[in-house]
Length: 387
Ligand code: SAH
Image 1 (cartoon, rainbow, N blue to C red):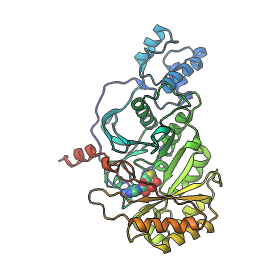
Image 2: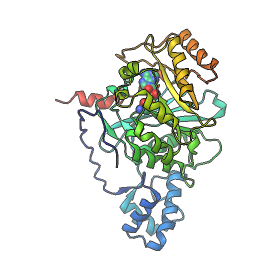
Image 3: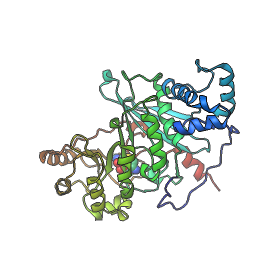
Image 4: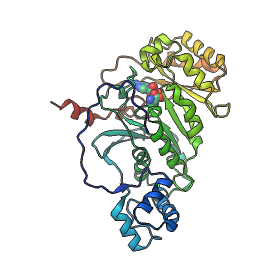
């Protein structure tokens, strides 16, 4: 079950786009659920495990979207499956290409709500490596002051299948089927798109386990990073039950400023957050926690802030690195990005103390695909068009 959405005031329902298709969608079912569903739909129990594995392979290794192509499944069985199940993809409403190679997909789900997914190729084009930035929710309830997604009023949790589908769509587009462990273009995933993954814990967990499955997409948990604004009570479970890398959107070194820019801090203050980081299962020197820190001019970017950040990391004995994110503006945003020299000086102070603090170069700004710029426009239009 999903957690309730704290901070949610006024959910605006989106009129359903009734597809009339009542068949069960395979995308997002766990292996167990798929097996049970096959039995419920007439597959003899003794064949169910084998059929489940066959289907799993076709769906998550080969990327098929219908049962017709499943060569090792008898024609009559294919037809029966087609009648009761589907392997669907959300509609790709728009794909935008940045001049730096970043691609942004706007996806529309069955009820008409939308979310964005971003593919960011590594800058070294010969490497063919890249990161897929996946959304956990339609919109977001957190209202971080510097983030565009927080201004989108429509919010709902994405289903496991809708989270997995973001990976499937990107693989479709990049021609990544069948899955191979070499020459992949999507080598990493970050749960850093729209929404707060730890407010949609069960669905995110289920989706990531499907993506990590050894007989499917097989992405290692070491190549997946989940980013949270600091939902303290869920952090330990995230480490224990999903086991991916953790990133924390810190952005400030005292409660006063953090309360203002990340309002969730009023619920889970800095000390509690850092304590939860210290206890994060799997955090050690080889596998550090990443602190994301958005550089906001005259708000959180002084030398004093940098020194305080170092002090906190030492005081809580955190195996941590810092990722400095130049603020990405959006229409009407209330902040400015720190000057380049300021960001460099801030980074240098942290590096000098022995903590890594690279500056994350903005990618895909020209197509509004950079950190904090995601917001599905067409939902906004539809909402404002309401009487
Ligand atoms: N809710 C999660 C996942 C979103 S990740 C979280 O808060 O971590 C998106 C990252 O981009 C977060 O670190 C967020 O704080 C950062 N971000 C948001 N708006 C931004 C902006 N305008 N410029 C730069 N980074 C931003």
